[in-house]
Amino acid sequence: MQILRKPLQRAYRKAIKLGSKATIDLIKKKGLSGRGGANFPTGSKWEMVSKEKDSEKYLICNADEGEPGTFKDKFIIEKNPEALIEGILIAAYAIKAKKAFIYLRGEYDYLESKLKKAITKIKNRTGSETPIEIVIGAGAYICGDETAILESIEGKRGQARTKPPFPTVRGLYSKPTVINNVETLANVPLAMLYDDWNKNLRLYSLSGNVTRPGVYELPLGTPLCDLIKLGRPKNPIKAVFFGCFGGCIPHCDIPLHPDAICGKECMLGSCTIIAVDEKQSIVDLVTNIAKFYEFESCGKCTPCREGTYRILNILENISMKNADMKDLDTLKELAEVIKETSFCGLGQTSTNHLLNALKYFRSEFEERVKEKKTRKRTAR
Amino acid sequence: MSLLLKELKQIQGKKGYISEDSMKKLSKKMNIPVAKIYAAATFYSQLHTKPQGKHIIEICNSPSCYLNGSLNIIKYLEKKLKIKSGQTTEDKRFSLYICSCIGCCDKAPAMKIGKEVYTSLTKEKIDEIIKGLK
Ligand code: SF4
Ligand code: FES
Image (cartoon, rainbow over all chains, first blue to last red; front, side):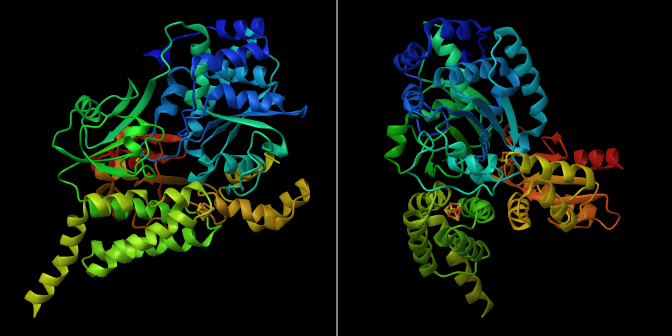
């Protein structure tokens, strides 16, 4: 696997030799882009911050991997923490950060010692003076949002901030800040060092109804069927969910590429693939995900706080065979309003899976609703 | 300020939860209004403002675990401990929480007890784990 190569601090030395500007140019030329979901060019982000006049700047490594079904960042921290730390030191050097933070999700607290060891080792070997502090979260999905991370590190409730200003202009403690995902930063030394580094390789987290779940390193554009085959499902796969936020589609032969997936009103995001086989009920699974959002909604804005609750209510009624056909329309309408009017990404994406499920698997919902009718009639 | 989260975790680590009293003390020590401390302490699902059991069990019910039978495991655990999610056993040994994905989806269903992770759970495994903790 490309992600497991060992740069052995050679990339850091190369960066020092090149200087900050040439390092940023190199990362731009290599075409490294953000792996947290947005695919923003990493070099350009660094450049924006390095051009800010402020003398105080920060780097944050986003290790708050909270999207259900995602575990690739954990994989990197466990298998190649040295490359990650080297990447952090290079990034901090390039943007002249005063300090770097690793925001580690609370659920990953047991990885702290591993990270600490790697930090000491790599700092010793490189002689870098940049302090790296690990901040451990305390369980809040929304902290994966970059502005919520800022709030959380500053010791507040992890709620999203209004953008703009973007963190690159006013980030941590109102200072210019770069926030990069674990996979992005671990790729920094590899991109700098190896001529054959492939910018299109991604880490896919495959789980659900497969017998070989795990992290698979494959290029963007890999056919979905191929990935599912690697997972060796026991039963035929019916649907695929791209995490909770990315929506769902019937299992089909599309390339795993943001553009192709976008056409299906889904998002590839951080390459999370949850396979669902034909034995499962989409209605129940969608209800399970609705529960997740109802729980994780931070409560700051009304559409998401009240909407996720209402959606869960209706879905539970449908699940319990206690709903009408017109509830399906209410559900759709509600989902659209939440999507359009929520304040942050959590709310805006919280109904993707539902809207897609209503579109592609409507018959399953209708059957549940009808079941009630038939049951009532036989009772009479 | 990033200290606040750390301090709150430390208090919880020592006392098991963050009491009103601890919040007041912390407010003086850090010169932050109690309201702000309370706001932070109640926001995060892993911070508790009520007394907890000796072992806090967080069991995942997100999609990958759900597709691999987490509901059965949760029901079994609830029956075994005679509590529901969010409650603490009478003997104060266990608190149980259904939680969101803990990143072990490739070994679902999964749960955490303290810093320990338990994966590919079965009823037999649950028996063993609970027995090992007594
Ligand atoms: S959309 Fe949801 S998570 Fe985001 S600010 Fe509103 S209530 Fe909070
Ligand atoms: S869904 Fe349960 S650990 Fe990820």
